[in-house]
Image 1 (cartoon, each protein chain N blue to C red):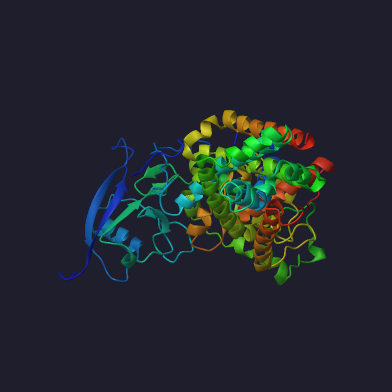
Image 2 (cartoon, chains in turn blue, brown, orange):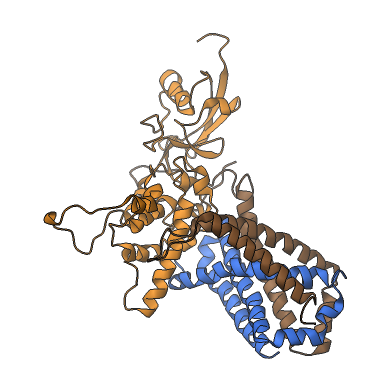
Length: 119
Length: 147
Length: 250
């Protein structure tokens, strides 16, 4: 594709690849517990009390997992959204849309780093 | 019903000697036959983006104090959040099954001196990782350990 | 032909650039034999009913790759597909994603350009002298690329690929598979050169793993496997070229 980020395609693909692989693996328990288990009352609410959440998230492993839980899905998400856009006839505007989507993922990744550090 | 593909799809660098009719999309693209699974697969990108942003908001709120965190937990009890996460779970399983199915054949027979494991072993390993991490992380998140 | 013979109707896309503004459909009802392939019906129509029908074919045994067309919306080799799997009406159209020269004949020059762009030949830094004897290759080394050498250039994969439909620069399944075949060949030393092509404007990373190419391939080449293996190799080559002065792969 003739777009300004052609030279970065391998990096984007590597990030996207991990986004699918590790992102899917990490997101599954998050969605099961945080997205459904606790809100539906299947999992006791104390499991995600503020004190416990802070304790888990402050650990270096916790921070890394949370970082992965944000960054990896972002890159998988925007890359596939770009492909969907092209599939539906948007190839001529890819030079504009692709950089915008990847910028969104970059900003999200930077905010993710800030978010896990400030806990 | 035929629809036009990109006007320059498969066009040669120099035009031929006679006028050509424009290239047509495959009939069933994008929602018919096997293309449906592929199109849905790419559309899960929206789910992943939203999930990533939701986790970002949750982590940011955690760093902003107890009231902020409790507000996140309260929001997750909203019916729209629950519906989204149910759809997201289906999307995650769909993506995992489709991607893991393709993963073994996407490994080159050799990278330098390294050969990948047999395809069957790769597939078993991927599902073992997925199930193992899901079980372990779910137990941690749900308070089964590290109370 | 006896009156009891089965008949089928073939709805065929026709296009004469000298007469037609746009492609149109024309229906032919013909008697068919139970053991016919789709190509036999097309040849019957051309020989007995309408000599103006234009279509490509040659070997009649699925090795030359000439007779690819859309049959009931799927890219198929018409010499390979038995008629009895189809209903009473069969739609035959030129391969999707290609400009159409006339009737069922598509413009193939674009495909030829993509094929040559991947340098589909053994590249050596220095050719062996005759006195050094032949290059030896073990059965194990052959197995690493043999599957990808079975392509007959029938272009069905290009017709099925949604990326080919939307991104004209994309090198495409068969060409990438062929380039990858050479990069995997133990006799070849050109992987770095091909990786530059794979990371160029026709970038392999445009592939979104629809896997349709492999679904329609009549020779079980599995081009989707080749393309996605090529992505990993190109990414590794890119990463090592960041660190080293020239990429680490051979």
